Length: 120
Image: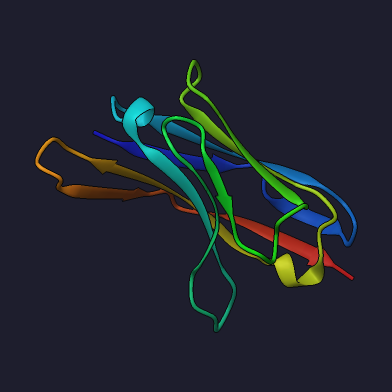
């Protein structure tokens, strides 16, 4: 059974930093691309950053240069370091694991989310 557990959210002032963690249980971690998404009230869920199983990363334009995604395969954990936070970064941040099997079937797994609130 696959479980994703996010942690590290909280309240921070604008300009501050937070580091989110996503711990993935189960055997899929090493072969999965992991992504961080966020959803603010009344807005659609948006992609923040992704990291593939080989370590390639991709970022939304709105967070480039401020956020860094990384993974520790020994700990089955992905991190999102968020610096220079802005009030518009306020949202629930969710972790996603995407695994594709040998038949090219796609499996998506989600965590429960962690709240990030940035005060001005």
